[in-house]
Image (cartoon, rainbow, N blue to C red):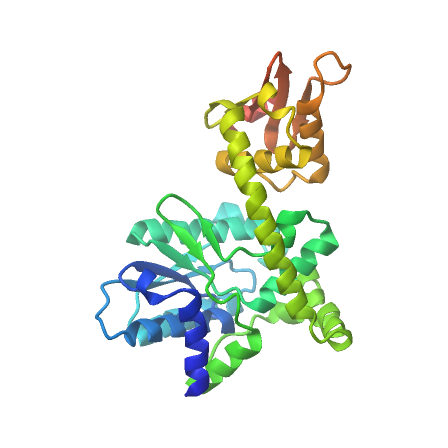
Length: 354
């Protein structure tokens, strides 16, 4: 019983029920150990409150269909668990145009695309039920693996910050990750004490993915050589997040001075407001604007951000390009004291390239 309370107290301390007990919360449940533990803990925390709570938990599961019958079994498991707990459940499925045809595994999209599809589904569920929060089950182990993967791939300060605990998805919906201080071993101990089963994703055992190789090969070696490596990496992520928050505030102030005009497919910046600013701060402001515009970030690596920042910084009399094309159909053009960034509507993008 003590271990049950320890696990639930860890979540309740990170995310007190006073903040969500009277609201509707969408809980993302894959059927795996982490998400099942989160669902059980949130329900037990809510049910243990002396005051009757008005809110409710909505179980949301997205079936990508990559593993055929195994994926279908995951969905059945989540439905069954939700029914047993007396909770409503919504199961989403990839549309045909997202999954292609033929073998599901061969048509698996990249991780970024899959993540966008899944979060779009979760946001749709949140809107449907008027939910204030979407809760996901990322753990301390996920944080360590994410930071290591970004270091190996190449990252900046924002990447070192790892997985954020809270992220605003829209003015009405907030994404919360209340298990970032909980380890996978604690998750498994909690489920064992509850006598709660869960699903195992067979692809986690393969070495076909960088994330799996980090989990199976790199981290065990690091822990053997440096027993405190997990704690050190999490501390690095926390410090990076604190530093990034400072830059974010400065970038927001710069943004308020720089943006002259903004619409869904156009962004106009005053060059005079940004040319004297530090290049790193300019890049952070641009990243923030990209996210706000919902322009694709996948192809925007360090090289592209630097090229755009240098285009902004270049003095008018200096010879060099006055326009560049960027990934995702975005173009940047300097005209006098203004920089215009445009991304035509989807139906018009092909016309601009012809």
